[in-house]
Length: 257
Image 1 (cartoon, rainbow, N blue to C red):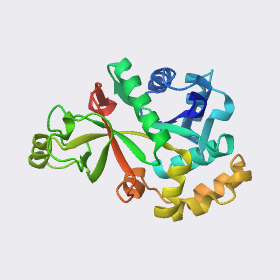
Image 2 (image 1 turned 90 degrees about the horizontal axis):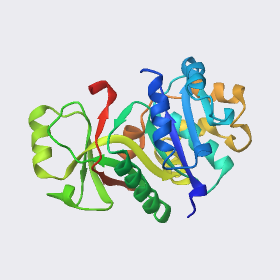
Image 3 (image 1 turned 30 degrees about the horizontal axis):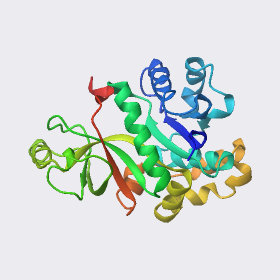
Image 4 (image 1 turned 120 degrees about the horizontal axis):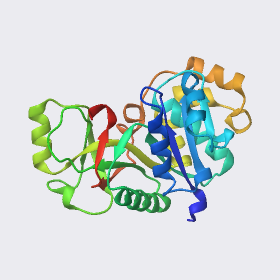
């Protein structure tokens, strides 16, 4: 599949320093065409986003009428991309991550893109943990002990959100658990298909997206009734399509620095 179908969706909830948005944008310019970067953000942060990214095409700033967590955010972004490119494949990322080893990061994302283009899976980048940490979510893979030494995609077995220290230490010792980076790669059509299966209470509100996705009044009605639900809880913990790509670049949630 050509690079022309690759997109990036930056999920910017506006709870951190606005300058971080530009850092994240610049990071993904190395991975997808620059005009294929979209930012989804709530209304209260939209003006700051425009100031930080004056080069962003207006149609690539998707303004949410209300903050509803990552699942509605992704529905909005994925339906928007499907109107532009039915073959769209996207990397979705929080806006407030610190990434070191940027070259390795770009390589890892490209490898995940290639696998997802050939397989209808929902891919998470899983960080090989350096130590036990109770502040991160953990993802267990089916390949068993020392799976962190393996290369290439691994099938997800379980998700655990912020375990106590004793359990986190066990997780790290087994080598079959990864930190949940919050970075996803998938086809727009595949994530929508799984959301329609597991989160119909969200996708039903976007009915008519083919012609109304850019209509502010329609979007206000959809978001007004939308539940607050995350992608991890709403889809990834339920789907049989969850996979993980081991990532070894430096990574941190900016809140932890």
